[in-house]
Length: 395
Image (cartoon, rainbow, N blue to C red; front, top):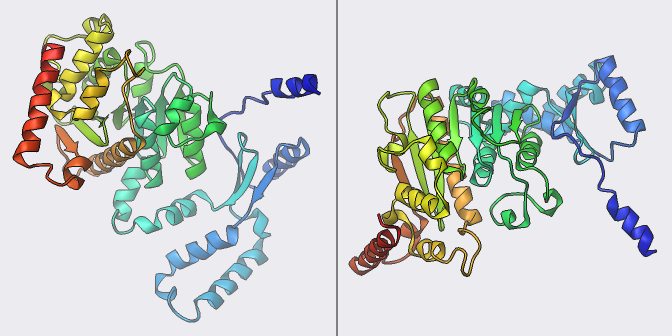
């Protein structure tokens, strides 16, 4: 019995591709492919709420009828007529997710996007939504970066997304990445791509599982409208800005800070003379010099960039305990979500040529929700802590 269990547990299954297959059953070839997939036993779950999707679509296309007594009867007549032209099973598309063995009936792409984003109106206008959707966004680093990706896609944002990260999902990541234990060990780019496709199967996700490197960064930048920098590698962060200046595209970087967020926007699309990191790391840095930094040097430079005055006291205390009582800097799921929402907001405004800062914004939940946060004594306590932190790092 033990041997049998061991043999079962050795079988880790197929290494599924993280890209869906979309079937149009009005196409004979697609119909044959789906039949073959089912014969092979690769379809385990079928989800079909197509009538509900059509009901929503009918309401969106006929908003003046939604609250009338005859609405349901009019929809029933519309849906019956739809089924008389072709079997309902052949209307719309079917999307298959290889990693979950699910087959799902969905609307055609334009109708799907219309229904998915209907509740955005008019917080996001139709014109704004279209510009947002048709963009190409690159995200480097998928800890906070995955929250950014999901926030973008949830709002009906960029159809084309490039993702770069070389790491795999670990258990310690699941305090801030919206994935579960069923994805442990999966490459973060694959994990994020799967979730994006599950939200919008018509997305186009390009993955860079080797992460961003000198020899692939130009390919990553091809066609980008905006790049999101959530990388830990400080030398590559510098290289991103070199390329952003070359290609004249904006960089957005979000840094979690306890429960709060630090959001930096650098408009290389608007200005030629912006200093990298808005000059917060100094003028004498280069890719080569940053590449040579040891762990303490990286920590010093990162602290310099964020600004000791902006680092919460608990975060300061935690950073000084790395390698003593904790193994890495702390990060919280709530802060990742705040960062994701803030970056998605900036992306949407930039794509629609709306005003947004070309500098830094501090998004502090502490300030808004802690009583007496701005009282003189509390401010003095934070200033003293920041001064001590500067001295420790020699800033």
